[in-house]
Length: 185
Image (cartoon, rainbow, N blue to C red; front, side, top):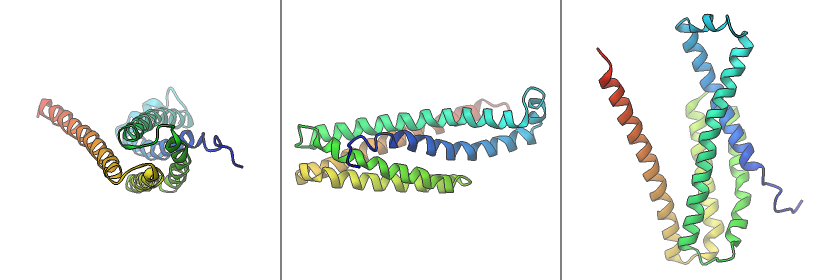
């Protein structure tokens, strides 16, 4: 089938599958935490065991879905900004070429289900999938880039993502430290 929209649902499925693999892992940890602290027994008065598990899974799936959807939106914006700044393509041919790269994330998300019992495994699969997609992206758009444009697009992507990730890590550490400092010990 040679329809340009054939893979248009791959990003949605990728987000759902990555979210599902993380949700299943976090649900197991959360259930263990609830059982250890005696909260689970109290919840059984209001929900059945299956209802608790399903409710937690759906809530976690929704949370991770929102995170991955936001990451997809940010990634698309960064990709298109980098093409705006460095590409010679004014017609949008590069966007058509990189659209099939969604299959890379789809394959990675399907593989993450195999590793749903390990945060490290899911993380490694996600990072590897992202690196493979980035190489695919650079390869596909390299035809419309000069050498300086190619260097620029790589540095732009690495700089923006490293700034975002470093900023989030900094904020998490800052909030954690302020919570720990406010606890009466």
